[in-house]
Image (cartoon, rainbow, N blue to C red):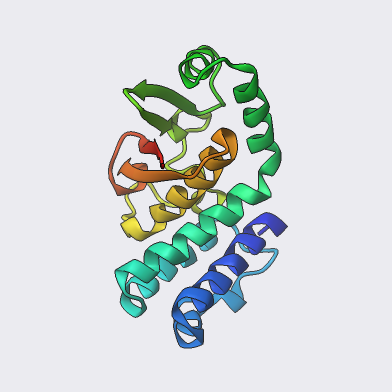
Length: 196
């Protein structure tokens, strides 16, 4: 397990305590102390799958969403250079339509974008990588192809996408998860709506 994976697991504990309390954190993070530098992708993915089951059992739905959105926001912030590069490209465009048209020609690796009216549709295509993946998140790299994961896991991506697009557009956005690879979809799709 590398530092980035370790940091993301640590953020899960912090976010759980922040939104659901110390008791919930203890339940969700049970067994994380056994993960170490020798833990491989399969062990990490199995632990994360179990952590999501424990989160589902210990925390009400609204707070689970907040926990996972906080995790995604932290992940996006750790990738701030990517957001800043996209923001710089957006500033050079004369409109959102022009920006989307340019991004369609040369999208961020493993993504696709479309504009439907005033709604951005951003798609993650983890199966386009070689080797194909079920999820962009490194914590799920070792997930067996037939393993089912709680939809709670993917709420992290909602927080990531919200932080990313709020940074690119410099406006608050609302994000809805439309489809997820981990929940049986062929891609991860998000509707991004500018607020206000």
